[in-house]
Structure formats: C-alpha cells, structure tokens
Length: 329
Image 1 (tube, one colour):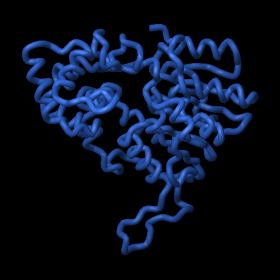
Image 2 (image 1 turned 135 degrees about the vertical axis):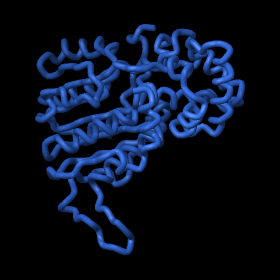
Image 3 (image 1 turned 60 degrees about the horizontal axis):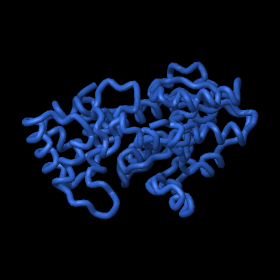
C-alpha cells in the first residue's frame, strides 16, 4: 500500500502549536507523516526543524518538506534514544514526541501490525534488533504471559500465552492473521475492537523497546539540554503515560521521604517546571474527526535549571517492565 494514500492526523496539533513560538530550533522526535513539522514550518516562518524517525520509509515525506522549506528542515533516520548523535541537540529550544503508531504503519500489511496481515509477523517500527515472529516462536510461556499482562493489561494473558505455546509446538506462527486467529478463538469480540488488540500492543511494545526508548530519550534531554528548553509529549496508552509522568515528577516535583517529614528538596532544586499540572486531552471535535486520538494525553515540561541529578531506572519502580523488554536485546 502506498504511503501517499494513507491520511495522517497530527494529534492535538493546536494544543502542541500553542506551546511553540517563532524563531526557534525544534526537534520533531517522531516525524512520522510530517504532520507536526509541516504545520510548524507553515505557522512559524523563522523556525528551523530537525525531524527524526526510526522508520526510513517516512523519508519520502521528509523529502517533500526539504524541497519546500530547504534550509529550514532536515531529517535523520535514527531512534529518538539516539538524540546524542545530533549536532542540533545542544541548540534546540523544543522537543516534540508523538508516541503513537503511525496510521501508515498500521495500514501497511507488510509491516505485520494489522490483524489481517498474512505477511511476515514483524511489528518493527524501524532500526529493530528483533521482530515479533522471533519472539512469539521462542519465548517462554511465563514471559509471554507477563508481557501480555503487564504491557497489554490483558485479562486473558494466561490462556492466550498457553494457547500460543500449544499452537507453535505443532506449527510455527508466521503472520499476524495466524496470531490474531489464535487469540480470537479465546476472546469473544465485543463492539468494534478486535479481541487481539491488547496482545498486539504488548508484543509491539516489546519488539520496539518502547518504554526503554522513552526513558533513554527523556533522561538524556532533561539532563543535557539547554535551560529554557521545552519538551512536549503526547502519549496513547496508560503504561507509557505512567512512565512519562514518573519521569516528569522525578525532575519536576519535590520529594518526600515520608508524609510526616518535610520535603527533601525545594522548588529551587528542581530541574524542570511542569507546565501541564494535569494532562491535556483532545477535544470532542478532534475525537469525532479522528477516533484514534481518543486515548491521547499531552504533557509539557520546561527545563529551568541545570542540576546534578541523574535519573536511574530503579527510581521509577517499573523495573519489571524494563526487564521484560530487555530479554531479547
């Protein structure tokens, strides 16, 4: 399927634009179909954008913007956990993240995200070291159950994991439709949502190391960017939003050892200011026009001080998720 035939919707675009201003240097950390970058370049004629994406298939969108805006836009095919590779990093004023899966990735049957794809079971977003087929056909039942339970919040995780293992003992699982059919035989369809949705989300997150990518990127930005840099993040599922919230709170909220003791730091010791005390949500109008935006949450922080504080994974109390992601790395 041609990428040109698939419409791309930049989620919560107006809200994102409201935090930007002109004559700035911006890194669009999840370039995708170029929705944010295109709108920003149009609205702010003196701003410069570097778009990055792990999926090199989006380079055709990037090429169009390069041709139109010439010196104001460039593109790099890297993961956002590799921001340290960009010479533009140190001078950038804004970083924008849209952590959802692109429409064209979901609709492209060759990628293996679709429930009906009979192509190789891949689910890679680009620059991957593993794919879904390798995981599904080699993972232990215990680890598979935990992945479906923790990353997909799947109530039937044990039954689904057991059935997948039984099936692959007879025949290797080669494509998304085979996997979807196994899950559909266990769960009955309710409404329009495919019963395999949660399981596919969980496996996709493992394949792409999505939590580790977010952790590495946000940690690096906050601890290395210039003061007054703003970071805008749009999340789409409860687990990645929890991770983003915990990272933001680590750098931007006073910490109490106990509710009976005074705070261990003051506002003067904080590295960032949280600009969205509560996450922003898409409008009713946007959800109607683009139903996939309904789960979106937008959080924004601004670096206000260089601090000698370093976030470690165990500070987040989410190590069980990271360990599952790291099994195949």
